Length: 116
Length: 115
Image 1: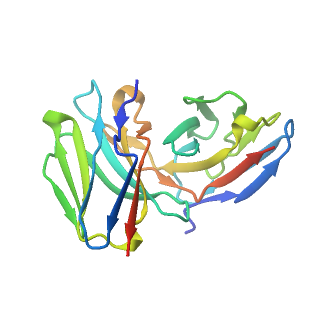
Image 2: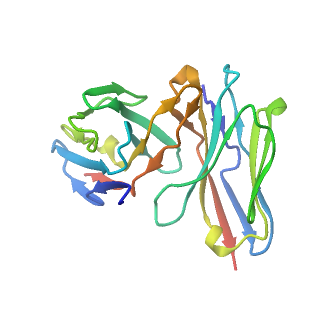
Image 3: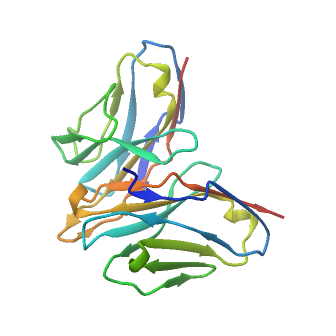
């Protein structure tokens, strides 16, 4: 049981390049999330998914896209990378939200992305 | 508007001192959940505790304790007899029905414990 895994751990992109950050979980969790963490800041939600085939925007979705074709995987796509997207990206998952009782989110190790 | 405020940006203590991290939140929901996560220098986010709004009992787990005060909308975290391994960034987060239980994070407090 690996929990939430993310690849790559580090990446440097040039302005205008694109890439996909991978996230996978083996806990059969329905909910998955992508966050970015800028220096000295808390986490901001980019996109989330409540199940395979269902995604929705978070607080800061511009410049990103997601898909959720399986329960396990939730890749984050950056098109036309910009320096403002330099950040640490975290993926998280949780089982579900039972009535009035949300589950705890568990996080992956993060991907440090630099756009030059 | 910021839903979770962690007013202390950085705290530095000497080993064995106690350290208290403040967390103040804002919500219109009567039922909500509060969390603390730890981010050590290695960068991962580690879940520490989850507390629901209808349980105001304080909680202790080893050297960690949490003081939930609904009247002042605060959920403070104390590390007793701090150790160098406690050096990390600590995040408080709020989960509420109005936001579909998504997490709203504070900006975090960096704790440095010096030997």
